[in-house]
Length: 303
Ligand SMILES: NC(=O)c1ccc[n+]([C@@H]2O[C@H](COP(=O)([O-])OP(=O)(O)OC[C@H]3O[C@@H](n4cnc5c(N)ncnc54)[C@H](OP(=O)(O)O)[C@@H]3O)[C@@H](O)[C@H]2O)c1
Image (cartoon, rainbow, N blue to C red; front, side, top):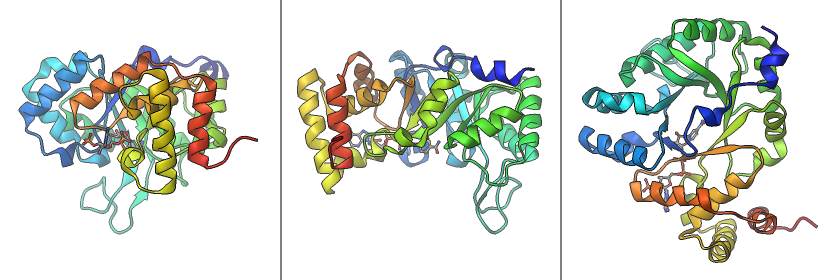
């Protein structure tokens, strides 16, 4: 396949996922019963949030899988993302013997994906991401593993997470499948992506970005540092100007305002916070409001 054609016209992420994604990183800490989890999934589906984000390393997939086993009709209503490539210490082939490390060798990708499928009680993932750039990445093995998983029907689409632009471009030049997304940290709290070149590279390649920790893991809303106070004050001002119900809606509207087709991941355990986030899809910031939030984050103006 012509990689250039492949790069310039990948599958549109928005045709695969919902406009907001339910992140299940913290699921283990929620302490919910299977029945309560099924109700939570049904409730976010009713809000139009049908894509769920997992990773083998989150240790949340088996909990989620119990819900899918008990309510198998949910599976076809969901798009499931999982990630592979981080080995924490432990005692299986997916663990490090001594030192936690990144591992994107072909067999590790396949073993991790198959473990995710077993844990999640599903026969396929909609999207599989390499969780972190592995400094020792054997790109040809990644290409073979992705091809095998696609040919076997175990994964429909592939992408990466936390890659810089060079790492993304290098991997895309080697793998046959289009990399349809780069899932990165981006929020008014964490602005690195604005200057790293990732957004420009994704726009040039027509690749959508997924943004994790849009609320800074809650820090953005509850923090007491000077930066938090500046941000909260400005977010409240903008909330009033645009008629938002809460400052987290302004945060999501700020993330969505970037021209890079960003899809925010939500991390809350509370369905009312999901419902609130969906209202952000209707809110519009203007450029000045966007920059006032940027200014509150960096602590100086553009001039
Ligand atoms: N690819 C990666 O490397 C990577 C890294 C991190 C995360 N992720 C993905 O991104 C998802 C979202 O990340 P995140 O969990 O850090 O997202 P987040 O939305 O920034 O943070 C969620 C946390 O903020 C709290 N929170 C939400 N709304 C709040 C509010 N109005 N007031 C106070 N606290 C509030 C939540 O508590 P409540 O539960 O009480 O609402 C939860 O503990 C994860 O689940 C995971 O799927 C990916």
